Image 1 (cartoon, rainbow, N blue to C red):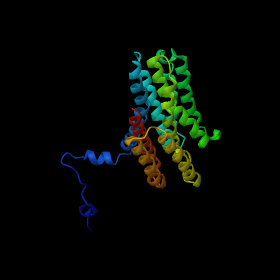
Image 2: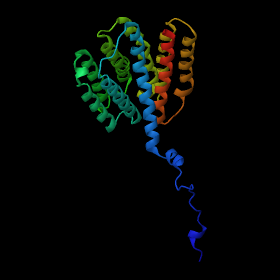
Image 3: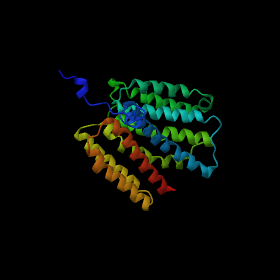
Image 4: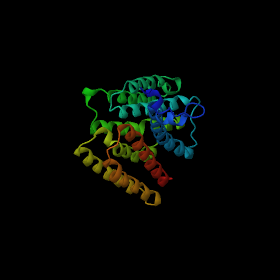
Length: 263
């Protein structure tokens, strides 16, 4: 009788024993970490670029200990990634929301009562977003998230820099609200005719908002990105783990183009 071990294929190994590149490619944890990092970077680029550059005209500076606000923004962005990647039910997202709430009790943020309440409101909303019986996985839930995500952290950064908030700065954040409404609609309303109709309506509203801005090359580029994303990406069936960082990346790209258009 033949020995089956003699006819089996030998294990392929590198001279050092393990191919680390292949191991990385096959590691679900590594892939998940990379996708989460993309979401965190995308959101923080949006949240920090607007107030930091806008405040240069006002000579505003962040106070010492601002790393606390950085930690909050990272925790919240990571929580958003887990919420959407897990279809609105995630233990890790709940834990991250609790940690972000604890961060708001630092002396820097607690010293500004308005900022303290604003950040706690955002954290609280992300928690109730995951409570099934409240049913915020809907257009209403999306509108609430878009408003809080667009205004909370940029306003907190601006206020801590300047000790006040200008109406002109608030107006510059309105396109950001529309960007959340448009790019996150597939996550709130997946796989239905309502999703297609809602994304079309919100996409048109976003385009109108962009076209109301002074027209130049950057305006045209933003219009192309928004129109192209609806024609291609919103009509593809992608894994939810890929959808989340992909939509956030497209949002960041569009928002940064709009920012260049305004500056």
